[in-house]
Image (cartoon, rainbow, N blue to C red):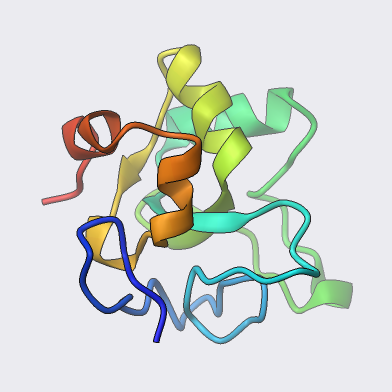
Length: 119
């Protein structure tokens, strides 16, 4: 069982929309996951706009990938480097610590995640 950033068993991030690299609801990673989809976020309008401007449009539905598009308030397994980019730009979305994979700590300080923790 993978661990979260708190050292506990990884919790599910979201089932609707179905998220995770493996589309199983969990922000877990493996050798095929080049983007490291390890950070469980709560999307905000500001973050979705930032991500779109960076070339990663997460709000437009993509039916060919069974992706409904995200709206503010949706939870999603985000690539760790996109979260870092957003953090550095002052646009980081909130994070669900219990559903964020331990591997994220290789790129993000726990303190930075905790300051952006969803309540």
